[in-house]
Figure 1 (cartoon, rainbow, N blue to C red):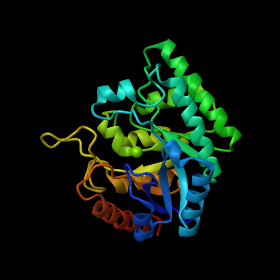
Figure 2 (tube, protein in one colour):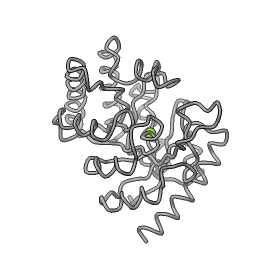
Figure 3 (spheres, rainbow, N blue to C red):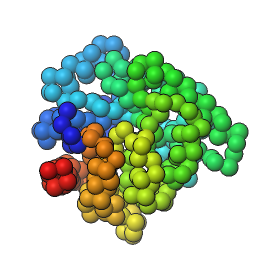
Length: 277
Ligand code: MG
């Protein structure tokens, strides 16, 4: 795979991200895949998905875990509903996460990623439970020869580093999403990248503006290059860190998602040529 291969988020069962036809139309060769619902994870469907991507020449580099009842409406709802944090849903979601890791393994994908949720750093009881459940995911992934990537943003870089240190698993890594740092108010994305850089194994190229338009939902991002991330500085830092993996565009909420993704690809390819030569 070429250095900084451009990629996009894709989905095989609807939802966020473009479908495989859009992926091939855009000519990108790498994707992050939203884990499909259970009916798409049967052995037959899994084999079918694998064959489809292989024949299109598109490599899936990370499978992202999400849950049907994750709720991103407000930051408060995220804290209550997202990831492996909600105690009443944790065991069922752990089971589903491990099943998705196995699905990814069948596809030949060596990493899964997810928003773990808001881990409370002031509640030692809850903290140790989340550390434990994260170890369970890591240990399962390790048996599959996979890494587990934590999506950034729902904590500061220092909190994330402390959490990774507490879990103590070599295959725990970071999917760095600079826009999330802005959207969740979790600190400056570039400073955060400097801190957690050694753990970064995948990235989302996503932008966000600090200032919100009137009525704009908190989680709405900005077209790449038009927000406050400073993508060139972001990529220069990735370069200094020696990161050569894919640059995966994530554009979640836009009236012109396809157009924005196309412009983002051109934008990133320009920066790649400028920085890597
Ligand atoms: Mg992301």
